[in-house]
Length: 274
Ligand SMILES: [Fe+2]
Image (cartoon, rainbow, N blue to C red; front, side):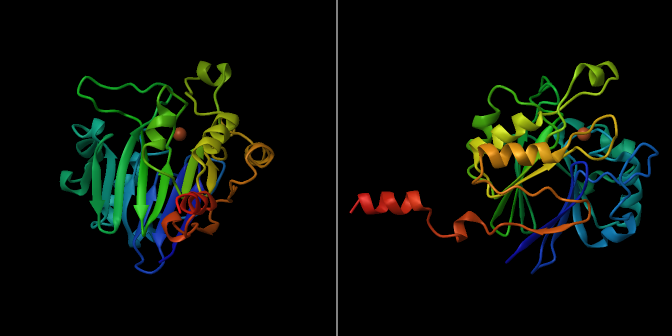
């Protein structure tokens, strides 16, 4: 079994199993807005083999409402995964049948064919937990063919983020936003994400099999240089592979850790025990 993925720009990821062909899209931003810097690398008509779209939160570059309406019409079998926070209004506002949605919140685990989906709160910039315990911003933890993937959506650091992620075990791939935040963006109403240094230090602590920076290339006034992230990682955490990917570039996911055999530390522990 092998898993591949493609960055589609911003936080958009297409992810699939090469053997079964099972494919999902996360945070695809497909609308032809004038302010987007990148052309679409996937067209709505090309998504016929996508089983479901996941949106981490209700911002246009993640749950692309106009594109979702069109996608739902063109691909009537596709499902949609969204935070439970939006359960009451989103299906009607998108004019998509409620039975095509799965709703996620931290503590929920969903099985969609071969894909397992879990959720972790994200803070964009705050957690904004509602009275009923629902969170509007989520990260999704996906397990496909044994490959554990953390797609962080949009998030800043918050108290407990390291523990929340460590409690879910080691990830094979971490998709992390790196565009940061500042007063100029706040004054325009643009809320932020981790800086590239914060994202790198989080990756350094979590030690994923691969880290892929995102959310830096779609809008001129909300970007970051991913090479700064790469250089920081290589200087401070050279043992963690980094992939800075062009939109449209297909990349092989690392083999799941469970299939890579025992780590050196595990072998040493085993030897000590004899
Ligand atoms: Fe975003």
